[in-house]
Length: 390
Image (cartoon, rainbow, N blue to C red; front, top):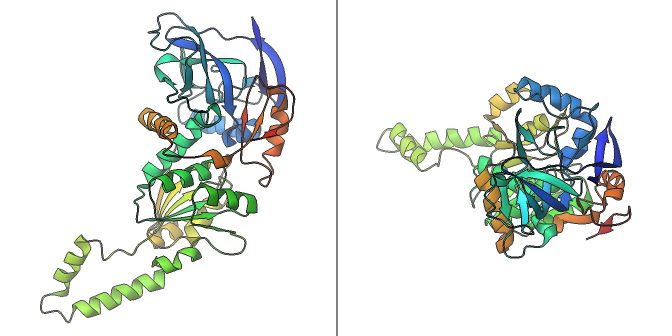
């Protein structure tokens, strides 16, 4: 039995007839109704070999390579079509589901849509792991449910950033993941969310998702927008420290006692933003480190596929906290799904288009224009090759 799928080979995308996958032990066959086109898919199409080399160094040897024929797609929504052997069958055939995109094979665990050993959801069907597949609650719209995976990435990034309601959050890059982070920060009541993107269209989407300000980095720094939030620059911080010490020296007790008391309540550390780098191009990390105020916490979410360079002395002099993130935990994925289903988070502004399998090649091209689209999802049942506005 065969099915239609979009395959990637030597950076070329084609619609082919391929064998319908067969679910193994503890697995499900899912009929795909939606699949998101991820920025990782765009990068892996042309830079997969570079990332595969990095993954091999970290111990995973089966990341996709250009000479292989790969079915992409790891952001998925569908309905259960068949149970594999030795499954618990807690979810009946026809149940709408999303899934954490990992698949167990005899050779190990593989990333759905990013390995030849785990074909993805740019197809009419795919196989998922039963214990990683979740029922979609509350009749959640498929176009929103399919965003569970990228929204979970944002959820995890915010957790790693330890953002509180009173913090200033700066999002550099307003592609789908940056927009996801903005929407979640807004839902959590973070009071100051500043977005930065050179695209007017993306800045408009950032505001719709909940950013309080959206700046063009070719005109002004997003960190200039934080000046009235009392965030520190190096001279201001040093001057404040000297003034504090001078004032404490006039107290009847030793200034170090007063300083220790102030330190306990956090008064001796200048406020600094949490910065989310969501661009993933060479030079962006160093640029963010150079522009960010002292003591900033920088969360690197964008995936730079090639080599990059930073100046450690810049991070040292500013005491920048640099954190890198990957994916999410199963609990974060589950909580993201339910937050979407409950309406706590509204990511609808980031969804700009829908396309069938025949239009995936054109959708990849369309996503290269930041003014045209932010997020396009695939519906394998949709006819034609035109990206329809959502």
